[in-house]
Image (cartoon, rainbow, N blue to C red; front, top):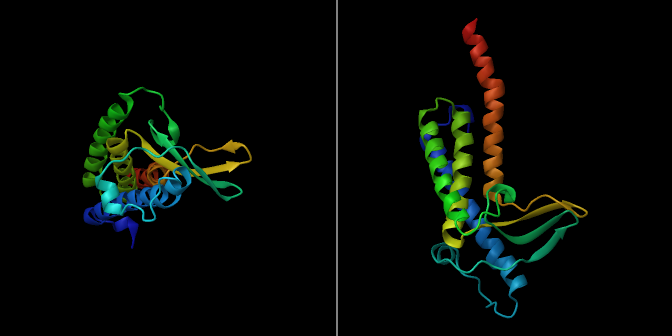
Length: 192
């Protein structure tokens, strides 16, 4: 697929795929890995199926940790803030306010995606929207976002994050690169 010619329906499909991949990854980590670690006495042998898990909010799992590699753990952290734990301490109304803000931002990005002639910009926005929607669903269901990827060097830990956070950051980085390099080149070529 040539991302420079990405059309709106393709971008929306990428948004949906990112959303689904984010939710499936959260379900898998919570039900298959964290639940047996955190609640070994109450774990039944079969994990809740994905659709049932997605449709029926459950109490957030307690903190748990499983070392995978010397520099990587799977953890269960509930983030009431935004990506990487920013604004995590805003009380009970914080998740609702962040959900409303996220929906407003997603709406603006969606308008930008529809109007943009650039396939690369559409791809970047699709990544941001897909990730943002994945985190919005968590906030609506649990009052917090499930974060579970924990990279560290010794005792120095990067804040835990998830697939949605990764696609949001990558989409923003791609927009910045496009704005700094590709838009500048077009503007210079047009002015000559």
